[in-house]
Each structure stands twice: as C-alpha cells, then as structure tokens.
Image 1: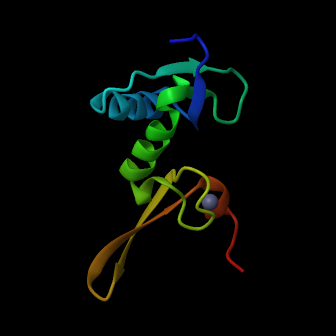
Image 2 (image 1 turned 180 degrees about the vertical axis):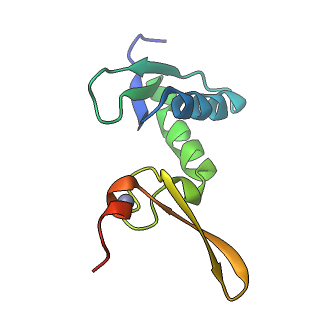
Amino acid sequence: MSGNLLPVRAFLTRADGNLAMRKLEAAGIHGKLTAELGADLPFMLLVAPDQHQKSVEILRQTDSPASLCERCKRKPATVHLTMIVDGCSTTANFCRDCYETPRG
Ligand SMILES: [Zn+2]
C-alpha cells in the first residue's frame, strides 16, 4: 500500500471524526484522522485510495438525517428544537446560522 491517503470527509469535532472512523473499521477499512488547525472543519478522515469510494458510501449510508441542518442541509445541526405538532412530538434540527437567521 502506498502512503498516499485520500480525504473521505471533514468533521467539526474529533468525536465526530472518531465516530465515522469506527463505522469504517466495522467494515474493515482503517482510516486515519488528522487535525488541520484553523480550518472550518478541522478534522479530516483519510483512507487508502482503493478504499475511498467504499468509505464514502458507508458514511453516506450511516448518516443520520438529524445530524445535518434541515434548512440548508449542509452544516451540522447544533440546535435541536422539540415541537408538538398535532399531539406528536417532533424535533427540528438547525445549524446555528440558520437558527439565528429569521425565516423569510
Ligand atoms: Zn443551516
């Protein structure tokens, strides 16, 4: 195996990166988590090139929809609002930017 690794995904926190790395390890893929100080998403998960495509698919499949902002669907949701709609409890998840920006 060569020493070249490809980034699968970047993470906001080391915990998120470790969680994703464990998902890959469950599939027999050994990733490496590197920290890039100062970046918006500083923790980068790297894998060998021949395992890259499979790694991307695994992370996509295991993604929880609740982990992304429901409004922009791009940033991690850090604000979780529980609302009662028609007697049922439902949770809305937003990133801080969307939560603090008024709708409309
Ligand atoms: Zn958002």
